[in-house]
Image 1 (spheres, helix red, strand yellow):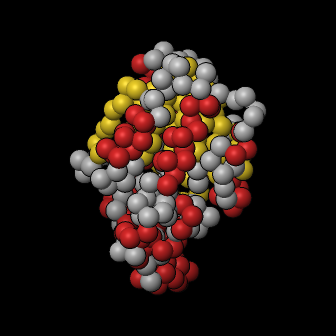
Image 2: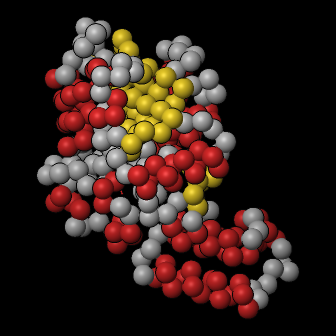
Length: 265
Ligand code: GLN
């Protein structure tokens, strides 16, 4: 749905088709007051998803507010690729870790699609974890949420995963100032990633070997122009089977690799 349809279906409490087919829909006093308050907020730049308090991701409903980043369509490709790779590798009961889960959209969509998966998800923000738990409850799935700065809560615990997935912050300090005004409604902690935007890839890749099972898969969403740089970081840490995939705008958006068999046990 486009933004106008999202707003009108919300205000009129109807589906998209009824907007066009149902001639009896009326904007009475309450509804027109609601519509004008929504439009006022939207005109100040607030993203429509925050105003309505919900969005869809991979066909599932998610609560969204300024506790976490709004799920993006390209992140659906990340989840789809992860599911496909696990199927290709014949891993039937995967143990999965989503690093920096935010709204929980990746972890919850994986749990919905892979019924036998053991899904863990971490975030450094308590507020984001609360929202992610609400989204797991809304979608009736079990996810083990951890408050953790990257792997900090897992240190020395001996947990190992078949798949580590992450859409970490990846906006460089330089790019941050030139983003659309909508972005400034979202938590900066979910977006900013240092001088070159690669801080979180460096931190994750340098430690991930210790938390992956033999030949486990590490899969990332990356920003514009970062795919080759992230592949370079992976290669230097002994990862192999490197590959990438493009998003709907033909930007290299997904990078994945397998842990080398001899790396960190
Ligand atoms: N894709 C987001 C944006 O460009 C950034 C998400 C992220 O940093 N992980 O707005």
